[in-house]
Image 1: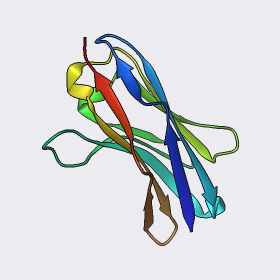
Image 2: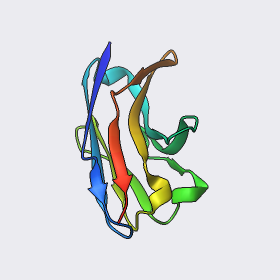
Image 3: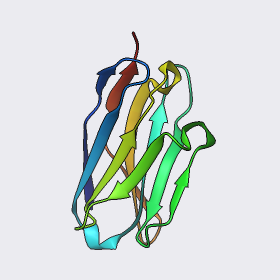
Length: 116
């Protein structure tokens, strides 16, 4: 089992920055892929960014050049640095971890609101 705990969400004005963190515990040695998803009001959950154990990254077109995903040295934490935030970035952001064997775990989500 893997447990995920997110932090760092909040209210920010357009153009502002936030940094989300997600810390994994439990069977972290079995995780090979982590990512951030988001779900806005009335929308389906969508991929924001992901990173593999070899630090290969992938970004949604809507956030390229503004968001950066990274992992901590211990590989048990994944970060999402969000710059130049826009109102359309408003959503609940979820951390995801994928374990060998394609077992998927989700965090509880953290709210990000971009508004003036």
